[in-house]
Length: 345
Image 1 (spheres, one colour):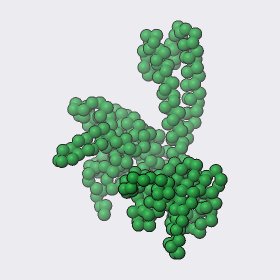
Image 2: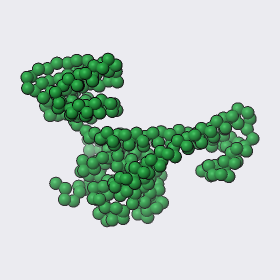
Image 3: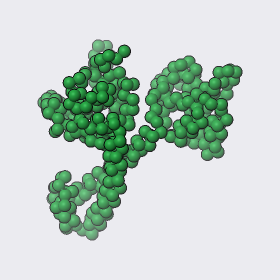
Image 4: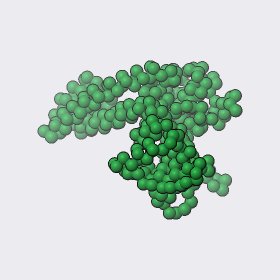
């Protein structure tokens, strides 16, 4: 069996391999544009084991899957932390990945399927367009504020739009207003079918339907959570879920003194934003959520309380998937993030 360590770059790959049957080793640089990588992997006898650091290149993942090879993707931070030498080259990186594979120390991470990765692109594309639309709206709000008009969210009502169009502006400011209004209308037309597609996918997914029983969680947040978390049984506790999403504080404690900072933000940025938005809706719709949120607001700033609510919501959604219990039944069995699931080995 061939075991291959791959140091991946967009333009080339540096590979280092070991044939476990013959003991033969070697290394090679594969240039993507010349087709070296595809020819190299096609000539291998399947199945070969390829290890590489986490990457966003889906084409290589799909190619290896098609050829029947096994791809292991590793945590880049842990791979780098296990290499103590100060000399870093592509050849050394590929050889180090191969060494971790052979010694059984490779920090493998979970990889979603091809279908899940494609659905993530739907959510990501919609998310990026929504961010652009929010920036356009902020520019229009700025134009109104310069004229002494403050409507906030009411500016997007029919009456607010009429007020915006009737503002007495100078020529270039008026041109800016018209261009921004056309851009916003175009973005609305592009986002609408994406919203419908997300809702349709959420209706077909049983796990997403289960999460939507929680007040404040809609189809977009539910589907994004399911696609981001994957198989939730890989998380023994809710605390690991919060860490995976970057919703736990940084810590630099030593000598018996605990020192905490802001949240790590090491997880999926889009998922964190959706959870914070959903948590604010849950505060309005769920009496228990509102009670705990208001209690935190007495001692902490509102921004901290919102993040704490998002963390609690993420853990509750995790327990809903683990126990397959909808809201409100999950509230009665919801556990502390420090307590493992009852019955788990």
